[in-house]
Image: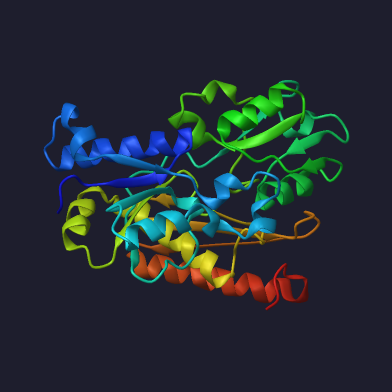
Length: 314
């Protein structure tokens, strides 16, 4: 492995906080002292297309790849050695030459309601304005509260909290994982029941990508891998791939381990929230391949169940 070992990440405060967590784990795996991290493991912040586009939703702007393309290019050009992502930002298929090298940790998967005037989604006034850039959150909110008015709310966590404080929207949703990593957990008015409103695919998990042939990087990143988290992630991403989910499809999944059994709850909705399809299944003592197969089977089955009403063409 070359020295220094360069870490790429988005320049947002949350992404920088996540990159520093991964750097600390890498430093420990390499036997480095904390005072050596900045020199030996520099973090290179990057502005992505998704960061620059603030006037429309991701579904309108082009999807999840908007947050990863610049980092993918930097990996392939050897300007960085690894890239740190929120796993939910990764598209279902990795680009040629890049692999998901490790899944080092996963925080609480729940969404948080951010609102100064109500403690629950049910308590919002009739016709209240809810701000979100997530088609999934929009559809789930409208399924529960069809009277709500949805507006696009883009920007990093701090920007969205500022817009809420300015009264531009009555409420918004943010991932609890991001709030915790930023030390902003107290901003949550309530935590949503993940059975009622399942999270995004991979929510709360971090992903570290690397070049497919970089043996030195892959060997050290393997020490950070969390096998049970990876197995659960494979089930969710299998569902995502089979359901052809993207930022244009309101899609969600919730995995949970019960002893050696992996449970998977999958959900898709129409963007207006009027229709929702759900399936749940499980697999006993799965490896990554069996978990992915579980997700793919549920994805295909949900497409058949939804039929012509499916949000994307079959």
